[in-house]
Image 1 (cartoon, rainbow, N blue to C red):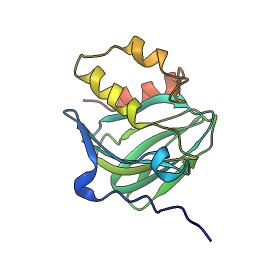
Image 2 (image 1 turned 120 degrees about the vertical axis):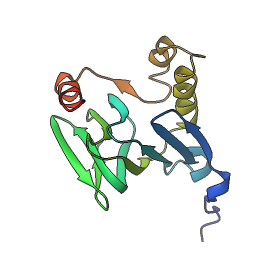
Image 3 (image 1 turned 90 degrees about the vertical axis):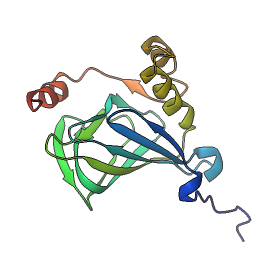
Length: 163
């Protein structure tokens, strides 16, 4: 018999972080889910960047596109996934994402197994507000299992479609 409680986040209880073009709702972090997953919802304006190219050493990452279109780098492949679609990026695979040039996107992300990630998103929020620096982010790569990589093809694709 399982004595673990279900992890539940009601809509009004989710912490929300917002920039001009991206809203992140922190749903359930690893510690609340017994290490099973870390989950969040990301809403991006048309063409907005989501995450720069990176990989994880401890978790696979699931993306579910609830609305709009998500442009994704997965390994060497750049593709667009529309509403109702999903993908799983295995650990160690470089990946990045953003709303497609012609659409906004609302996505759900789950890292499995979970890694404590909410503080990572709070750090990104502080960087956006000028309260922290990219040096702080680079120093935290190991802690948050978020390792940045160079991906010129990704940035060429993203900038080619900007007006």
